[in-house]
Length: 461
Image 1 (cartoon, rainbow, N blue to C red):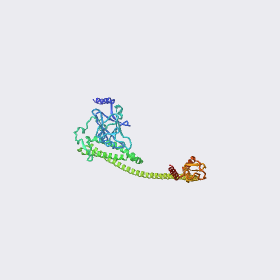
Image 2: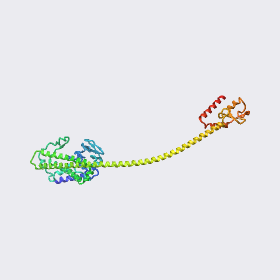
Image 3: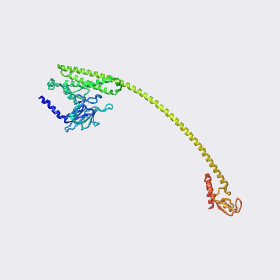
Image 4: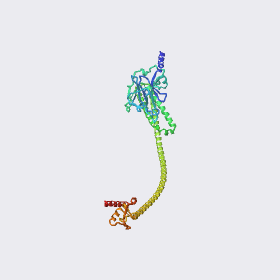
């Protein structure tokens, strides 16, 4: 009968190993994959009553006690629900709302928590479907299964203990943890032995990791200065230890509150729990001491950093002053060069100005000479003005056409040589020469000549 009972599960296991199963594949790691059995609700967190218990070595409070749950619906669709966790559940890079079931599909990225100090997310999974035989060596062991296996010896596997046979005299299944934490209710342990072993197993694991971290940090003195970013982690470790102290105190109170019997096993459990409580308090004290040393080292480092920044600013200021002096020197040289160029341009301008003055003087002299020539040679002797419509008599003397006409009314002889006037002829060449020379005269002389021409035309008409 035993053989049948033993072989049947083995046969079923071999048959099921060929089937494909859903699991959460840990990204970048070939271990700690989370199996999702069909028609099962999977709970994940750092508490003791979860399917898979997760601990973060770098940030112990990254995962909440009950972080999330995975559940398969009646139609076979898997969903994930965030149970009001502190750091959330992220599906494909988006945080899902708390207490709302989110549908999942193959290939979805599921991240528990957030990155710490610019690192990748520690608990990063992909929803995949693989043959069970191929991933069996990568699967993580369920926390509840491991606890049961460690609590019940193999030899007494099919036997019932005395506590299981006798009627249950325990308190109601739910009880309040403490007056300070009224929002969370936990199941009261039916068997103190099992609950103590589970708590001791969890405490030993976390305690050993804290001891390793303390030894690593105390063995390297320079690591304190180089690892100040882990100060937050130590604060979280202290919170974790305080939670463990509270849990242990609750277990002691639970055991002491039960009806007293002459049971040496329970008395031994109480003593061991009290010893564990003292150990946790000592660890918490050491962590607080280490945190104080970290704070002091951080303060010293900040002072050194401030001093270094002051020296750096002083050096930068000196370099800026040197650069400013260099620029001022270059500007002085440039100014000297510009002054020399400006002086040369001023000299050129003075020379040009002198040349223009000379040219203007020469032009004025030429105009004066022309004016004198006009006044002396091209002036009518009758009206003492430049010839207007000049005419030449038979004696070769020139006069204005208007003037000689008026003169001949009185006398018909040349006003200069007194020779009889036999003929008079217009001299266009003389008129053109006078008009060209008048263009170079002043505006007053031009206006006066134009007025005379207009008056004589009026008299003639």
